Amino acid sequence: MTAKIMGVLNVTPDSFSDGGQCFDISDAVHSAQYMIAQGVDIIDIGGESTRPYADRVSLKDELKRIIPVIEILAKITDIPISIDTSKPEVMIQAIKSGASMINDVCALSVNGALEVASELCVDVCLVHMQGVPKNMQSNPMYSDIIENIKHFFADKIEACISTGINESKLILDPGFGFGKTYEHNLEILRRFDEFKSFGLPLLAGISRKTMIGQMLNDRDVNERVTGSVVGAIIAVQNGADIVRVHDVRETKDALMVLGSVN
Ligand code: 9MG
Image (tube, rainbow, N blue to C red; front, side):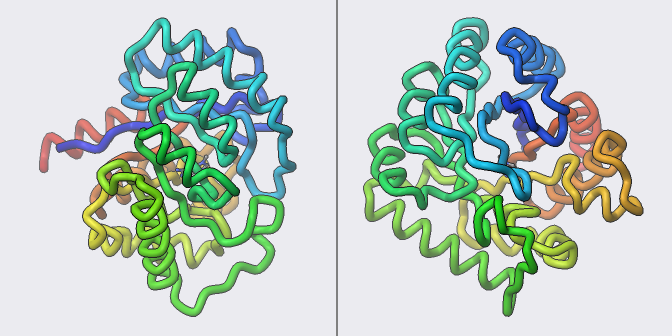
């Protein structure tokens, strides 16, 4: 079975990858339609930037950005919509408006998020992050990055199950770039298959990230498409079931080529 493509739809004015182009509601819907035409499997909508040093967004602003987009998309497509948020109230409103998955870079650590996810009974992606976006890239350190992430996943899975979330709803993501150095990211990519031991689907988000820029001698964010596609393919070969990407068509082509020989 080939990996699924989760397309990134940032509805933020400061998104590092689209320069804010997707901020307008109709632009966001248009971008989603473009991804659908290119064969996206899941659309991941976010109203708060999770990039390093990003400022927090208020609940009101986050809802104002994403809810109208979800409402429109839910009417025009059956493609699953994922809500990229850590706020329980946003999770509730987004699912009510037509989203069917939670993508939480804080792995349900915000007060009330575990209970809300349990109530909503939807798929949840648990992302590993050390720190918070504001400080996560200030000298991240681990004694053993892979063991640390595995312990984190084990603890989170246990917390989810004891709050009533069915294990079959969980997706694990080691969180490339979320409190990790370049070397940490490389180690995770090399040893991605070790997270298979949990028997849950794995998600990899590498697209256009700093680590790709670093692999390409500090290449600008808009010039990282090929590197991102190759990164996604390596992740899939090492066990990723879902890849979160900006460039749907290019990633889809690469996955089809990979699927033809596997
Ligand atoms: C929202 N977001 C930004 N980067 C991400 C990543 O690597 N994985 C997931 N699940 N979400 C991400």
